[in-house]
Length: 554
Ligand code: ATP
Ligand code: MG
Ligand code: MG
Image (cartoon, rainbow, N blue to C red; front, side):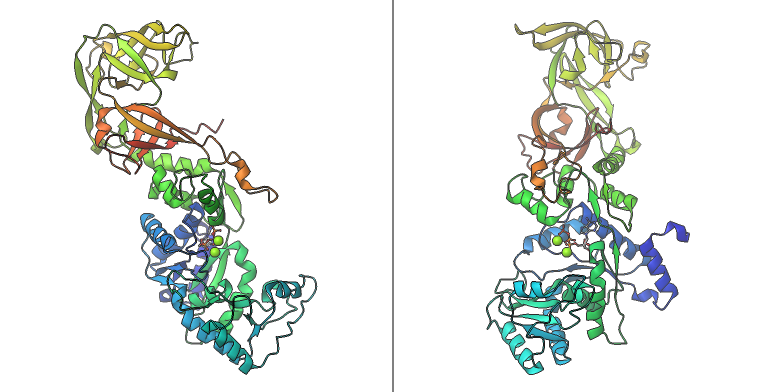
């Protein structure tokens, strides 16, 4: 492995290992806030952190950043654990910032005693106005010089729930003239009389992100705390807070930043995804149109496809929009290797093979997966009446239409060559069925001269009397715009594609009758499909994961 083949985060780690870090000190974490389900953007961070853990044989913690009781729920904790495990990663420790509330409180008391924190009794509006602007210094709070004794007493009252929400906050005493606005006496604690999903009503004060995150890294002795670029200005504060508690014998974590990954034709923000759920635009966090890990899983994506996607875009220093077609490419690439082939007709047109004996049936041998010899074979029934796709027949068509047209032949996949003789129509001219004849010597694999005859075009089909009716959910992009949330003056919901879901009843070959939720297939000539958990024994439901080729590329 050459230095050029490493990404910039790996360069930082290699440099640290060449410097004063030892290998055993390496430790990483993935730190979601349990306020929603994980999305494809998080997958980048998961693959980065857990990938480093595997590469350097170092522990990776799953840390719930659960300091905001108003938005966090156990449901989200459970979903996050399930998704990280499903992606194929094992965390060394399951950690919660809320488990550190006592330690954080004790350290805050120490900061007060050291003269580095004070209780401010102004409103949040007053505090905001006094912050000033980046070009001019802020104004000190009239409470900035409270005595240590008074601060300790008020902070304890806050903790005990003796003060209402909004009456006091604890602020770090840093520098009201700092060019970094985050250093102008940031709030460390606020009072919230809310139920927390883990600590219940034990705590009435809750620590802010900046105070919590670095100290949690320190408690867990995380060596490299990797976060997204918007936290770059927070690094100075991260370091200042560590300065207050760091003991020389312990490892001092470092925060380093990488670029957020955005995906086209969707939104990757838990807050925005929550709106799609709350406003009923989708049927939940795991709706197959959602860019959540659970939505992608239900859509039929494999963990391998998502990991390959994250690895192929890699880590970078600049934010960019990744086209969703790249994610779809990664899905096809993996599904092509692993999905058994079956035949299903989505928009059926009946074909009657007039010279095939009535009442006769036969079972044709079909290969399950040409990409995987070990996948074996199955029997597919054939009979006098079959279904083909309506779009696969035209009465007349030009030479480029390699499907069925009157007077011309096509091959039925794994079956016979048929020739269209007549279109039967209703009085309005709608085609009801097509009458064909077949060449009885042309059976695929029979070795006869007729079976080797080359005809342009092979169609998928299903025997009508054996067909299994199934529900198929065809998904399209959830947003019509590539970057629906780019324009800050517009509500991203304006760009929702109203036709993102079409439901059809299709006819499937009978081998699918035992398919179970989560089973994946290639419907030949149509794409990749997965069995949805909504399936019932009497009606199997399939989701289209992705079509066979990128129909958007044109
Ligand atoms: P959201 O706005 O969706 O809630 P977040 O960054 O607030 O995103 P967290 O739960 O705090 O969500 O994220 C956990 C980790 O995942 C963080 O380290 C965060 O930086 C990273 N992360 C979140 N979104 C992306 C993304 N789009 N690309 C890369 N990493 C991301
Ligand atoms: Mg966050
Ligand atoms: Mg967030």
